[in-house]
Length: 559
Figure 1: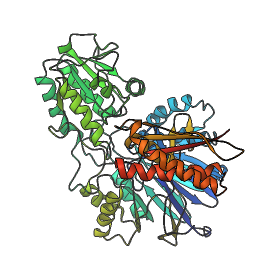
Figure 2 (figure 1 turned 180 degrees about the horizontal axis):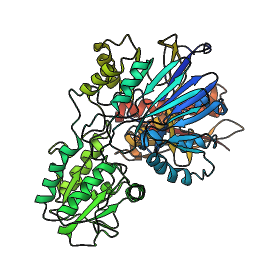
Figure 3 (figure 1 turned 135 degrees about the vertical axis):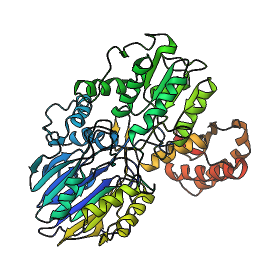
Figure 4 (figure 1 turned 180 degrees about the vertical axis):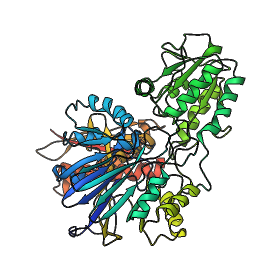
């Protein structure tokens, strides 16, 4: 777990009739979204997602929000509201429920259906669930929640208005304002306006596209681009997308039906999610289009719908690119369509996959060379509309990196919002008498899922992994007589991950022996102190001679 560093002190006790908001993730990164609302001694959580690791997190599987600030108050949690079914909003839920398994989970039908396999994987069988739809109003403890339809890149997304005696907080979740969505379900601006007329005291708004001018392109506008790819492709087509992007899969199925092709899903999460979406009526599959086998038709009649649009090493597309996929082997002339945008931090991984596919002879179509994807997030023009419709008293940008939060704050100020709060993960914001302000911060860092370990991996250990990967490893073993303090054997020096062989350290052995004998002569017998002597001399020698800073592991054995 890593820890934040801030000049803000711990927050004071919450004043009576005040509403407290703490973001435990999602403010400063794209992912691990989690916001905690507190009123009257009770807590309501909105979203609990994961962040996917980047290159500076070697070996890490997932990054969770930090539950530490609420761990001793889990009995006060009255519910977890999920705005939609993307991993960065629901992926952390099972890990929180492992600490208290009877917290009610509230979300739309599709969102809870996508969560269910995760709960089964973690053997969480007794979780109370509440399916809600737009227009529903339910109370959980002192929080009255009204759910509002919003349009996003996954069906059934919801905003939530949280009403307490301290005021009304409206949390958009992820949203955009596509006026011609594929499923006909638009963001309910009438509800936003109605809530605004009644008074929204704190407006928490999606910031992901706040630095993009204008309006986000409508989903329907990319249909001709997808159709054009199908029309000119003479061999197999592989389409990579998020496994939860039902709208994009629908467009691919429709294009396949139009051009007489069959579609097979590749990737466990793609197969599972599309089966759920089809069973619930969110995905409409033309008769005879979807098949079970990737070779059910000749290559010129096949489409593979794959995971891995973000270059994930274990996802289907990456394995296809490096020829390690057991079922799919790319052939020259195949077309690969990356129907997604780049999540910040994934650029290098995605370009490596594109290079690998191109090297194998594929024609790769992506957002950089064709209009084959549109964002699921509101751009600046849409956010301005929302601020003018809702007319909130206070705005707190959420869901985005620092530049996105600042751009969103500037938009709110431009529309005349009286008070804008720029917070980061761990900041504590109190709403008192209609005015919101930052009152302190809680310790809130990254929690790493590393194999079966959750939260045990530290930043120091991650640094060791990076050093091992970048600088190499040197071990030095010396055996000392425990009775007279003389060196019996060694030091034996072995290196791994260095271009040079072990003989490069021949020149430092006499210095090590001299330094150890001097320390032993002064009466030093503590193994740790002797190890420090060895580490210092070896580190200095490696830095000066090899221009490297390898991990050095000195071992002192007493015989």
